[in-house]
Length: 605
Image 1 (cartoon, one colour):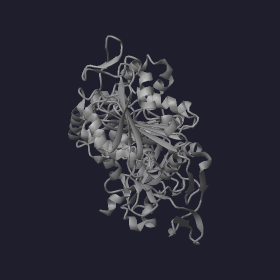
Image 2 (cartoon, helix red, strand yellow):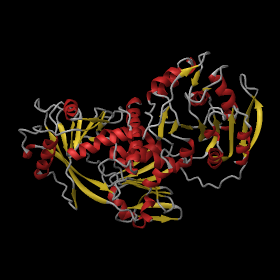
Image 3 (cartoon, one colour):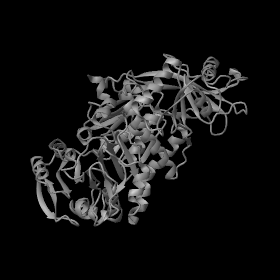
Image 4 (cartoon, helix red, strand yellow):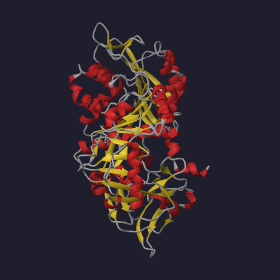
């Protein structure tokens, strides 16, 4: 199953949130917020330790009702000397459903504005990493849904403070096990601190073995004592590069990388051979699902949920993004595939808000049109207008991004620690110690030593004019796709031609697209003449393993963002966040295994 079990909200006789499974309370009867502040905030001396920092990272074992996160966020907001960014990472094996989380936090009036913000983006109980942004991206919550013994070894981060807040060791020994505590030691910064309400001898011994010096301190409420500790280790040698990057390529990958770096106060030189990029009117957003839940499906699930949050945030922050979560209906090709679709949904246990199986009748009801058969229904699937996404991303990045266009990069060279992009006359376009190559398939030419395996595949979409005879408010996909356009009409796509470098819009491809649409939605294209249709032609950059490429190469200072294939709107937001997190040496938004699967260094083995 790909979901984790949710907690059941109960209350004891005093009205305190209580777990019947672990026979323990979620916070002290003397006050949950006061406990969080005394034990975890003051126990880690947060106000003193995070003062003036660029970033501060807190790692918590046991998210519970989120009280410690909200208390830390509230303290960060109130502190004029706060760090520029606060990362809060928490692992939780039994998360609450959104409705129960809201109910559990409702009595704490002081935190209600923050609690509502958390509830608005609270994820479904899907196992894995979930990254959530608050306060214009300055507060970053990374939730790991799953068992701590499994999740913590997959975490790439360096923590400055630990909130150890699992249920009592006698009731939930796994969260206090030596294996978990050893992972805390691995993740700890040299001067990391910890705090916990428990004083159990086994916990003290395990923490001491992991390199923490442990002290007893006055406890809270009925607890006379608590524990606090500090990591005693040699500082790690790190080299901090200037916050400046040269990004080659202003397509979807390069633009979003520039925006994610700008959100971290980086200056970016964005270079592209064209002053304006031609893009299709809309593209679709849905995750990948398969029987084995292979790496591409796992990564796409995180990418899909992150993309939804990213696009919502752009609108919430006032940027004009054209998109619609109208849902995506993916039709099976035949009866065998329909049976497989049904089996996958039944066996993998997706929440209904993420994926449902729709039989032929329901699929037709969803589409509002005759369909060829059953399929998958992604209720949160969406279409996005790529041009509006580029505009919104650049607007959000503001003055941190310098646009150098049209400037065609013919080659790159290194001078000392600096990478230079040069034009056909060997003139330097821009230079930086940090280079991000995001120019689609041309990345392989600029970086032959990276051995990137990229190909360009031609694709053409067709634009169908508005007509009362063609009503479709959702996206239908399968052998191609049909999506509504914001101003009326529909887009149908897309052809898929290897080794075809004709950039014109062809009637033959319109015919192919009309046939695709009619195969999925019988009669949908009746009366249309291919020669009268408008369209768009472009090129996908594909990779043999069908995974995008985001991350550092084996070449010092060089990073890659490319290989989005036909799923750029899915992969680009999370890939850009991953690359920016790596460059900032921040906690990563993906597990170690999944970020490795996207790394350009996978081609070197």
